[in-house]
Length: 353
Picture 1 (cartoon, rainbow, N blue to C red):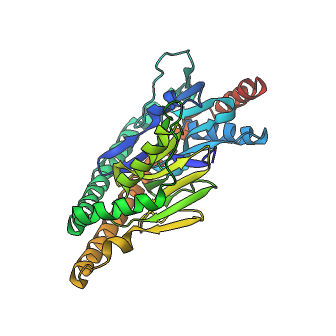
Picture 2 (cartoon, rainbow, N blue to C red; picture 1 turned 180 degrees about the vertical axis):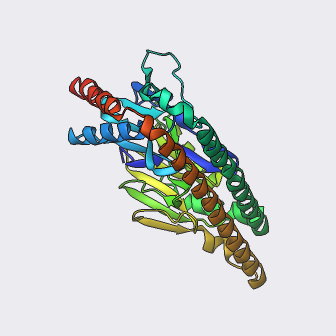
Picture 3 (cartoon, helix red, strand yellow; picture 1 turned 60 degrees about the vertical axis):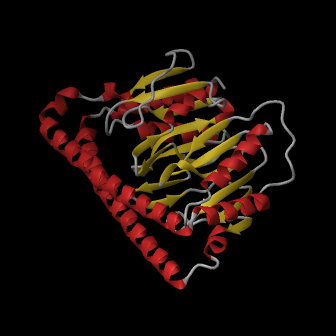
C-alpha cells in the first residue's frame, strides 16, 4: 500500500468544495512540487497524464489525483520514488509555493493561448462560466439536505446506543496493545470517494489487509479516528480518507507501511476492491429497534439517495458547461507548444533521476 493508484484531494461536500491540495507541500514524500497554472482547455491534465505514463514506463509508481468535477481529468500526479509531484494549482484548488523556487515552482501553460483568437469569444465564455457556477448552488444544497437527514437518523438511534456499539467495535478492530514508537507518526489526508458528474464513486484503497465496516448510519468516523490516533502514537504513518458527505469525519484509515486499513462503506459509497475482513455496525445498531422505527429510517435513506442523485445531476450539468468552455478555448491553444513542454519536462525530470 505504498502507492494509492487513484485518489481525490478535493471533494464536493455539503459545505461546498473542500480541498486538501495545500497539504502536498507538507507531504514528506515530496521534495519537488511543480504547480501548473492556466485556464480551461490549455492542456494541464493532458501534460500530467503524459508525465504519469512516462514515469510508469521507467518503472516508477504513480499516484494519480483525480478531479472531483471531472474524474476523467487529472488534477495532480505524485511519483513518490522521485519525490516529485505535479498539481493543477488553479481555482477552486489554488496552490501557491510557500517559498517559490525552493522545492516548489510554477509552470504557466496559459502562455500557450493565442489571446487574439479568444477576445471575440469573451461573451460566450463569460456566459458558459456563469452557467457552470450556477449549477453548484443546487448541487451543494442537495448535499446539505442529505447530510441533515443522515444526522437525523443518528439522533433516532440515540447517543448511548452509538457509544456502546463504537466501544465494542473498537475492541474487535484493535490489536494487542501497541508499543509506543520513538516519535509520533505522520498523517496525510485524501478522499477515496467522491460526489462527481459520473456518479458516487468509490476508489480502490490498494492491496492489503483491509477491514470493510458496514456503516450506513455514518457512526464510524470517531471509531476510525481513535484507531488512527493510536497508530500515530505508536509511531506509524497513517493516511486518512475523509468522508465527502461529512468532511470532518474519517471514512477510512490506511497504514502504508504495513498494508493494513479500515474503510467504512455504506449504500452511497459501497467501496471498491475486495475486503479481507468485515464488521457490520448496522446490524449491531439496529438490533432491538422497532419495525416502525426501522421503516422510518429506511424512508430517510431513500430520500437521502434521491438527494445525492440530484446533486450528481446538477454536477453533470456543471460539467456540460465546463466542457463548452473548453471547446471555446481549445482552438486558440498552441498544443504543439504544450507537447514540447511535456517532452522537455520528461527529459529534465526523468533522465536526471
